[in-house]
Length: 162
Image 1 (cartoon, rainbow, N blue to C red):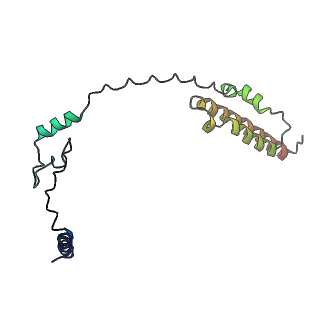
Image 2: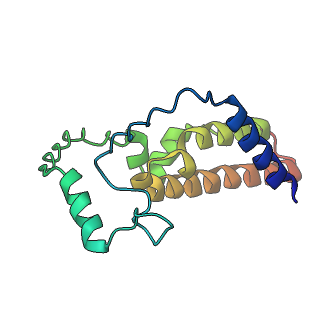
C-alpha cells in the first residue's frame, strides 16, 4: 500500500468514528447551480457529461445580448511643434554667420565652438523631419572649422603670426 492510500484509509476510518450513530436523518441534496457543469468537456464517471449542443444551449442561456459601445472619437492631436528656426538655415553663409568666425580664434576656441555648435545642431537631437538639415549644417560647420584650423596651422608653419 502506498503512503497516499494509507492516508486515505486512515481518513476514512477517522470519518466513520467521528460520525454519531444517532443522526441518521437523510441529507438534503445540494442545490443545483445553473450554468455549465465542469464535466461537459468530456466523458466522466458521472452524469456531468453533456453533448455539444447542450453545452452551447447552456452557454447561450448565460450570454446576454449587448451592443458594443461606440468607439470614442480621439481628440484631435495638437499640431507638431514648429522646427527650430536655426535648422532651416542651411546655406554656407548662414552657417558661417551662426558660427560667428572672425579669424581671431585659436585652435582651442575652435574645438569648443565645434562642440557648442554640435550640442544645438546634431542630427540625433533634431526632430526626425529636420535631421537632413541638421546633418547638412554639421557638415558645413565642420568643414568651415577644419578649414580655419588648417589655415591657422599653415600660418604657424610659415611663421606668420596674427
